[in-house]
Amino acid sequence: MARQHLAFALQKPISQTIYLARHGDTKFNSDGTGERVRGWLNVPLTAKGKAEAEQAGKKLKGKGIVGMFSSDLRRASETAEIIAKHIGLKPEFSPLLRTWNVGMYEGAACDDCQEFIDQFTQTPDQPIPGGESFNQFKKRIFSGVTDAAQKYFGRTVLIVTHHSVERAVEAWDKAGQPPDHSLDMAVYHEKGDKPGAVEMMRTSVAALKGQNA
Image (tube, rainbow, N blue to C red):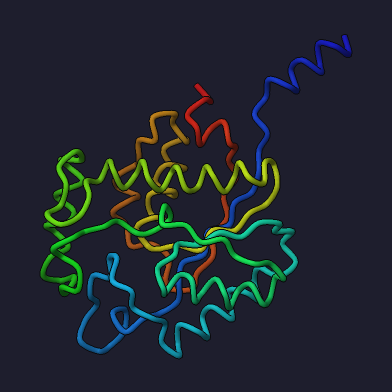
């Protein structure tokens, strides 16, 4: 009987906690002229954004985080460096955790172009001119999240990233973490966490790799 329980335990995916922190405020989030598409533009944090990162760091202190990963874009890396001071870890930076590369729409007012960007989620293999397709974006970010989870297998990790990444991971979770990484698109299109916000999810390396069928 003990061997049967051991075999079951070995077959069961090992769950782990992943914290997702969104980068702090930038001039394109709150410059008074309306929100603008950040994309892969390397905009820095504002003073408000740095304060938001400080608050995130205070929230995450004592959460048992053993590994810390971040997008390498400046607004995320600056946020990660501030949080790192509170949790005593050195962040690892990865381009896999960057936001969606929306090419021609970078820097444009969100009110003017968001509906056009959203249309590319309905034709997910079609790249945005100068950028990447929605499916390319999804494949990349899930590779980045999987790498982070796998490096600290079964333990708690933190990922500092962007609005579209947070939305995609949340939408996958709400869809039941399907093996094909399909998303609940209604959740994806919802307005997500504010700059500097932190959320937590439970998943496993097996689920992230699509092996939980």
